[in-house]
Length: 365
Image 1: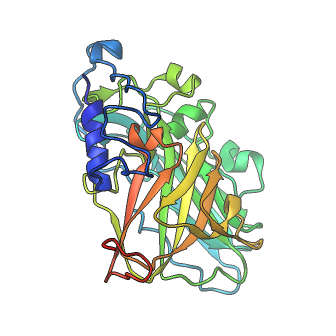
Image 2: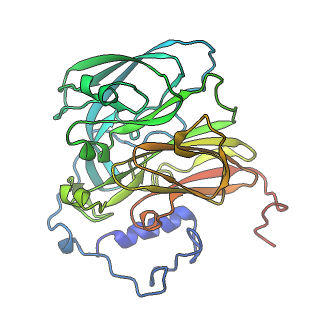
């Protein structure tokens, strides 16, 4: 067998599971699928890609963006001009331990850095294509009125730069991405991020904000198969990803990755979830919590929805929601298309730290 079985054990360990209730009360001990049928054995290496190359030396130790690293909320009340510089890069990094892949990124991270401005602000954005890059890149910002969202005028060869200026005229949180003719491949490989245009009056104050991104990786190997995975165009055309990742890596924010993201009990947390795609709708869900305030489709102006359990985040959009954290323990951020959680890497954990609250949840009743 390939390491798919190991991959599943890693998932269960990350979830802290000891039984069938690991994810949402529907996983068993591995001998049967959630429907109670005998599980299909994972493919062997010869059934996927024979002779998958050894893992290549990595260019960067980590590709997953830090979910806590995003700009501070807007604190100005009149229009400003921002000078923003972004570099496109091509880097080999690990999808998970022992599995390497050539990513394409904005500023060496997936998703690319969040851009945060106020409605009415002017942005002078300079895009530079790294001198070591092999491909042409550009940027299409969904917050831009203009040809290709700026893509037409930011097409840059390796070692070159281009600058555009635009006014942020409509509020909301929007995706940006590379938009060269081979855009689906570039986005899949990591070239997407979010631009937040706050309304003139700003957003409600919260205790903490987090920034995640979801995208699919289409590779020449099976999930967990050791070695270097090349990009697989046929799998992308068929929309059959090898991995569905949170911030570009499998199970990055779990105990077996970089560790959960920690928050304090009682904090109100705003979460941004950019879906780069390029193809799959995310059924965005928090196991053990609820989207108490939900800004559907990144709409930060209309009255938000309340107490939503699961919401679609379509490719090329950003979900935004606020949660309360009244009890300690893990909150698991998933795509509720659960095979993507169990087998393809789409899981992150927010660990709420603090004293038990047995009147709200009593694990020892």
